[in-house]
Image (tube, rainbow, N blue to C red; front, side):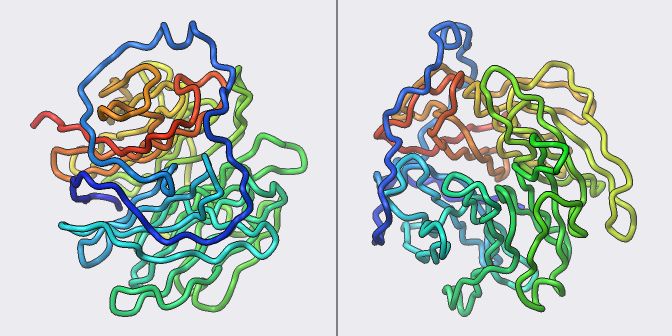
Length: 367
């Protein structure tokens, strides 16, 4: 999965297209002062680089077969700028590709992304902020000689497509808003084989146990009012998958049968409550989980025995000095952990508003 990025300090500039302006920048989310006062400062994150305004919500990261790193930028904090994907190289930041907007919403919103065994780049196109009527998609960027040679949908009908992980010839996608007729707080993990994706677009059946559903979940809505469920996703050295709920912080472990079906689903017994799980990654050398607690401006770890530790945390900030500014995704390379600062909060988050500074951070882990 995501294991490499180059630490460069650059402002990023790309060509943009025209989209309807729905600017949520600097809108206070009604957070309480008491929330801010209760947050400890832990660890010492550093500034990786600062992004231009046209990259106001950095999100997913993916490693290409050639070692290049790709970053998705959905621009949900200020979507007068189009969602794009950029490419990082050792000595430069390069525009990679613009993305096709959804024919109904007229927006592109790339979230997590990953390279498949076919060499193509797949990303979740999250349309939930634009239209909650199951418009989200899984998209494929067809690669030729390191360049985008066309972008097309391979799965349609998600509620809120989010995390994307390949394991072998199967891709796993979380849908943070997969409701059922008797459960309007639902979410799910889907799985699709490479052979299926080659045969043409798959059309999901909303509010059903579609044949591609691997597992479903229910979010317990708390004082944030957020009912987004399964978000980040990765697997450990034994092939067990882990996902966490964005809305209530529950961490789940899934085991699979030899033919890829769900064998078991259980809540991970953790040593302390995690309030929110956004992106996560697992170091398969140690099976340590690194996760983004977006609500509390924190990066936390969960050991194989369930022990939870806070690696880094700070109060509300604009991130200009490298401090955490609502983390959304993590990427591990050796002893360094890289963090995207999404900076687009919900109510009762430590981060109170989307500001004019857009950053990524990193932490040097102990050897």
